[in-house]
Image (cartoon, rainbow, N blue to C red; front, side, top):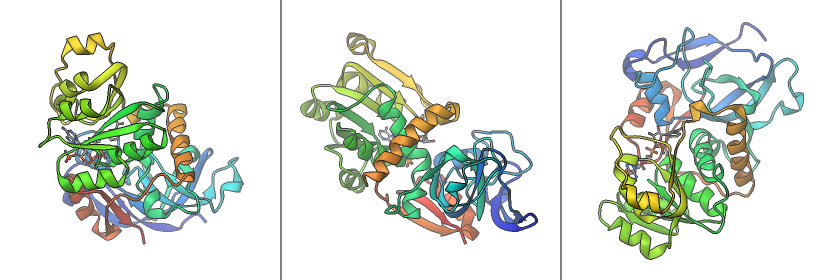
Length: 328
Ligand SMILES: NC(=O)c1ccc[n+]([C@@H]2O[C@H](COP(=O)([O-])OP(=O)(O)OC[C@H]3O[C@@H](n4cnc5c(N)ncnc54)[C@H](OP(=O)(O)O)[C@@H]3O)[C@@H](O)[C@H]2O)c1
C-alpha cells in the first residue's frame, strides 16, 4: 500500500561512516516494471559498499543511497507486468545498490527482477546474504574463459569472501584448487572450504609449493596482482588465464619471458561493467551450486541495523569473514 514507511540506513553524501550514515523511517518503495520488492531479512557488506559510501569509488547519488549490494529475503511485491508466480519466493540479492538507491540495508529493497535470485529451501538467509558479490565474482572467474574441469586453479586469498567462494565453486567445477593465505587461522578456513593445497604466502616458498603440487595452473583468481604477478607467471601452465578482480593499489610487474612462453592471458574484470547476460550467467552457476549444496556459510559477524556505523567500520578494518546486518 502506498504511504507505508520502512526503517532504512542511508547516506546523502559520501564520507566517514559515523558522519554520513543515517537511520530513519523513509517511504517504502514500490516496484516498477521489471522490478520486484524484497522484504530483506539479512544484508551483507562487501568492500565495495564501504568504498562507495566513503567516496573512494563514487557513483552518482539519487538524493540518497541505501547501501549494500548483497542480501537475502522474500519477494513481497512484483512490478507491473512481472511474474506474479515469484510472490513469496525466498531470494538472495546481487548488485542491489548499483544504479539503484534501494540497497539492502533497509527493511525493503526494490531491484530489477533478475538481481533477486532463487534461494533454495535448504539455504538459510545468512548464507543467502553472503553470495551476491563474492560468489558471482568467483563464478564469473571460473566459467567465463572455459571450463576448469580436470585442471588446477589457483585462488589467491582463499579465506577472503571471493576466494572462499572460488575454492568451493572451483572444486564443484571439477578442478583441483590451490590457494594462498597469510595465517594458520585463514588456512583453516580455506581447508574447510575444500582447498586441495593451502600455501602460506608469508611463510612458504609459494612457487616451489605450487610447482610440487601442480604441473601447471590453468586459471588464477587474482586478488592482488601487484603482489602475485611474479608467482602467477611462474606457476601457470600453457594458455592459462589470470583473472584479476582486485587491486590494493600497487603496480604489477610480470616477468615477460615465462608469461610469453606460456601464452598467458591476463584479464581484468569489474562487476560494475557487467551487462545483464554476463551477471545472469554467473548467477545461474551460483544457483546450480546452491542446489548442489556446495556453498557454505563463511565465518560471519552479525550486527543489528541500528549498529550500521559499527558494521561499516568493521568492514573497513578488514574483518575475519563476512559482516552481516540483521534487518528488524
Ligand atoms: N572486480 C570486481 O568486480 C570485484 C568483485 C568482488 C570483489 N572485488 C574486490 O576484491 C577484493 C577482495 O574482496 P573480498 O570481498 O574477497 O575481500 P576480503 O574478504 O577482505 O578478502 C580479501 C582477501 O585478499 C587476501 N589477500 C590480500 N593480499 C593478498 C596477497 N598478496 N596474496 C594473497 N591473498 C591476499 C586477504 O588475505 P590475507 O589477509 O590472508 O592476505 C583476504 O583474505 C576487494 O578489493 C574487493 O573490492 C572486486
